[in-house]
Image (cartoon, rainbow, N blue to C red; front, side, top):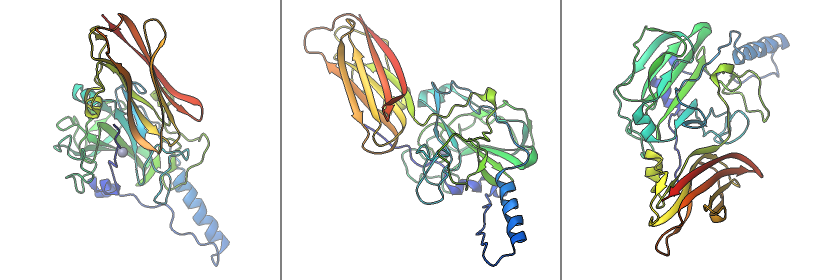
Length: 361
Ligand SMILES: [Zn+2]
């Protein structure tokens, strides 16, 4: 009833173009035995590398309703060990993850077509197209050796900045190497090519080859800090809000859906016959931590509680699916509107709550 969103892009995705390789900013700095001026110079150089002088202002890279149709599901790993921490020292990442994943809530939405947009103006350096959209799906290492990014675009911007867009839909790429693109220009469609378990855009930001976390503008090798950072590269108008977990989708059905159907279509209905074999509300969540509570409640047309499930997460998970409901015992259900409340609760606070309804007629 649940599934992990596995690693989708590894260090190998740098092979998309060898000019794109990431250079570590910090060598091992040894203070002892080194002249202090040399130490000071080296430190200043390191600080300058971490905080690029010319900043970048990024627009939203996906043409979908962030927080509803699509979600920021994984961000850059800011832990240099084999553990994983996001920029706030939370869990919305996995080990060696180098980008920001903008995930779609269903494969159906990918099929409809969601534009990938240039985050700012620049010149296209490289593209790749032609890889299938489920090449890495449900295959931990896929058939994508060395091409984990899948179909993608790399754009060079001023000041040594570059952005890379991965896992795009096969055949959708609209630009060619050398093209000049404007901020917000469509580059193609969100897909699931390369090492991707679900449809999403993996966006990578670099400065002079160094991987930069757009949520605080720092080098990805900088350890996380558990407080709201400054230096965010997102434009105010981009509407990028970081949420450390939430609801991907929810719905009503006359049965407990199969998990692939939830991912495929976010399968749901607004109307059920009074002879429906069951009334079920389901929720699909992301960014879960051990101890989080998933609370799904259904209220009958009378306003009384019809069914409820509170589930405490035993461990961290990238995604989780839960469903609750009742089977028909008599001949038919009372007519009227049944409502659901689907919530993700962390440390006693509601992270996200959505409501739904179905009419029995
Ligand atoms: Zn990713």
